[in-house]
Structures are given as structure tokens and as C-alpha cells.
Length: 235
Image 1 (tube, rainbow, N blue to C red):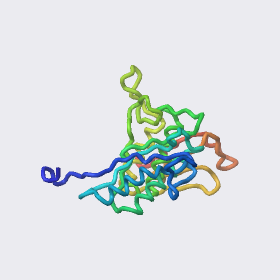
Image 2: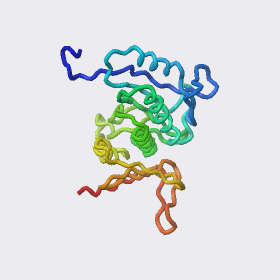
Image 3: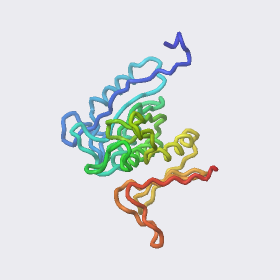
Image 4: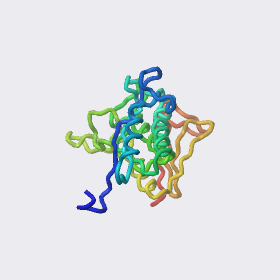
């Protein structure tokens, strides 16, 4: 391929980094968290590929936050920790850019997991923060149009008469992506409140990664559950 097009980038192994419930066979002894345990077989695939690839330009993986036993993390922050923990595990073993070619952040059991739901959008933003903090280079949103999968989209299904509408993720994604690409975003977390903030010189995205209202100060309105607020001062 590179003889034909020298500038093409080739990577792999595009393995699904599955997780398992604790106590299941094939669970990793070392890579685990509140989200479950990593499937050691998938980690072995990565190790083998790193030892035997020839001329790779990036390391590509895939994964969701639910386990193979369909256990979703209790909250989206714990789910996002899986992506951060696995990214750090990869970074310890390779200097190649890490690409999450697909990622599927699940919402807690009982929450709305539709492509246009606020909970799905918040779970996606929690994953984006985890990638930025742990050193991932690329995270590709699979299915930006509304679809049958239970993960956030950027617009509703345009094959429907009233489709093509923005979702709760749209404005935050449009604001974040170029700034993350330029390295202009600082990620902040309150030590006392369950809020996630993406900050840049020209604005911010504030995320409530829970389904509960959060009272920031006694004299302000509470932040609703699963809220995403975008402040853009660039214009």
C-alpha cells in the first residue's frame, strides 16, 4: 500500500477491548475498575500485534462500557473510566497514536439510551473527556445519524420526514471538536460537585453526568440532570 501511496497511514489491530463481570473466566488480573475487568484475550491480541506488526502508524481499538454479560456501569463516569484505563494500558506499551475507531458509552440501567437522549449525549462527552485526559489521539463517533443503536447521534434520522434535527450532543460536539484538535481545551472536575467542564479561552461546555439536579450555589438555579450547557464567546 505504501509503495502505491507513501503518505497512507496503516494501523491496527482494531480489536474490541471487551470487559467482563468480575469473577468471569478470562478476566484480567491487572486491568480492572468499577466498570468491570478487561478481557485478557483482547489484551493478548494487542500485545501480539504490537510485537509483530510491520510499519504501523497507529494503534486502533474498539469498545463499549457494558460488559459481555450486559452489565452497564452504575454511572457514566465509571463507564468513561474504562476508556481511560484501557488507553493508559495501551500507552504504557506503545508510543503509536491511539485511535478508538469505535466507542460505545452506555448509560446506566433504566436511563434513556436513544440516539437523541440527553443521557446518551452526556455519556459520550464523559468518554471524550476520558480520551483527552488519558492520551488518546482519535475517537470516531460511530453512526452520527440517528440509528437503531442505543448511543448518541449528532442529528436525528434524516430518512424520516422530520429528521435531520440536532440532538443534545450536537452543539457541544461542534464546539469541542475543533478546540480539542488544537489542544485548547482544559478539562475541569469539581472536588465537591459531580460536574464536568470543558474550558477554553472563548467559552465552555458544562456537563452534569448524573440524572440528579446539582445545586451549585444557594442563590442560583440548580443544574438539571443530564444537562449540557454550551457557552460560546468566540463571536
